[in-house]
Length: 288
Image 1 (cartoon, rainbow, N blue to C red):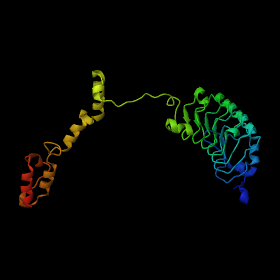
Image 2 (image 1 turned 180 degrees about the horizontal axis):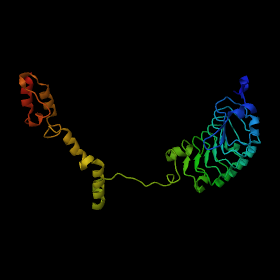
Image 3 (image 1 turned 60 degrees about the horizontal axis):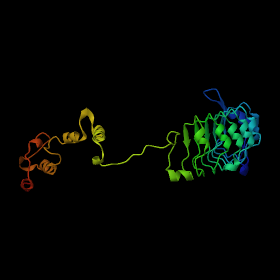
Image 4 (image 1 turned 135 degrees about the vertical axis):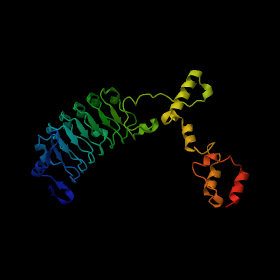
């Protein structure tokens, strides 16, 4: 286990870090040091140049070392839920990264180096839950990006580079100032971010004959149940003992309750009962 050093948080040694390295099913070397109360980035990790995946999420790290770019073998880096306010320029040297998670930190736009635009192999980038209102122009070079998280930031408008990215299939910009005016959307894709077809409610008399027929046909399909019967027909079958749905329901319920005088009604006999008026119903009830 990593050594504890009181208020300074957990101290990770090179020995404990090496022991914590595991091999993933796809053969990658993964080091997980998540949720350990680490306050200072362990410099010993810079010696582990063969690690493919590094998880330092859910700690208390405020700063990354300037030479973090020496971890050139990294393909996956998770730093979410720390206290980072800025990133070093050397982050741009991690050109092998495909996944980078920086969500839930204290990053500002001034703290994002333009070198992040050199990470041309990134397919997933999460910058949500920070204090960003702009992104470096170099982000337009992230052609491999497929997923981009910008939710819960301070953007007044959608970053321009999002429009030029060719492969980005999913962009999450929820809960930014500009989304409140446009209407929030979760997991907004590039296709969904465009103009949508308007839908209006109109009276049938305002439609031409062809459109009116189409609407009626569509409505018929929506209301049909199994076996080609409409919803209305299904409801009628539910009350098979009634000549008209609900017409004598109260009367029949009263008849079912009558046990004196040999008057009883079950599901089979109820359909043969006459259509009783309220006066006849009172006479029947008077027998109880």
